[in-house]
Length: 153
Image (cartoon, rainbow, N blue to C red; front, side, top):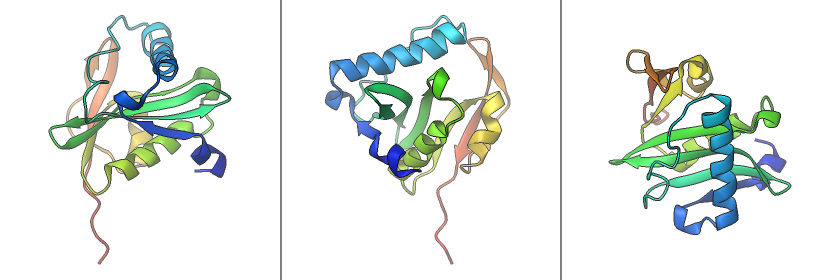
């Protein structure tokens, strides 16, 4: 990750998010997941506020450019809601966030449900498909797992 991306990286629990930041995160998620992808669903699903949830984003010039959240699914970290602003796509921000999320996760295994066309993207970070493709909100997804990193021998 570039020094610029690292300096714009933010991590917070829900309790530590200010109203303006929360609004910007929810706006970006709605713009992409609800409007662009034409999926009518309630994005604020109640999990954002859970004590174990961590919000990770890159902010530049006061705007959220990319975001993801890390949920605690009974001790197994779940990465989700990975989103990049349309005009920031292709700039490596999602990859920078996933890399940072895996640092937050540490040596624990982690899971995610990837849009099927992004399976290879997540594969670059060690995630492997663990089950059959399924359709959620009209979009094909695959369940994926990243095993706990093995110590060097």
